[in-house]
Amino acid sequence: MDKNTTRYNVQLYIYDLSRGMARSLSPIMLGKQLDGIWHTAIVAYGDEFFFGGEGISSCSPGGTMLGPPDTVVELGETEVSEEIFMDYLSSLGESTYRGDRYRLFEHNCNTFTNEVAQFLTGHSIPSYITDLPSEVLSTPFGQILRPILDSIHIAPPGGNVINGGRNL
Image (cartoon, rainbow, N blue to C red; front, side, top):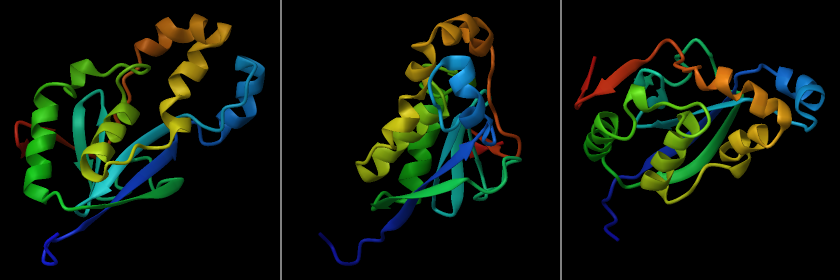
């Protein structure tokens, strides 16, 4: 490995969209304990990157209306340059992670951050986050709520949509 290779820190920002209510209400509503309703983002190269109903977006770390994250996980370092990363995101934003492809249970912010984390570091995000949709859908109440929840597109305000290699 070249000693002159630049390495960039990669973090996972974790937000509880329920602001603690999932912990209190999930045993009553779902019959099982959920610690949160998780929204995640990747922080690298001085920006926060996330996926929602508008597609892939970026902002300064903690710069959405969600404010600072509830938890920050150090995912490691990457040697991927910012230029290559932005090309990668542009490609994803034109195909797999277009806004119209967002699905709350199957293809969401956590799917995106897991894929990007693996691209940058070779590490996945914690399974308690990626397993959340199946946890909810495994309950009778989750199945009843699914049609309503499927229509929800989460896109935290405050980001710049990344599309075709440019920020809009």
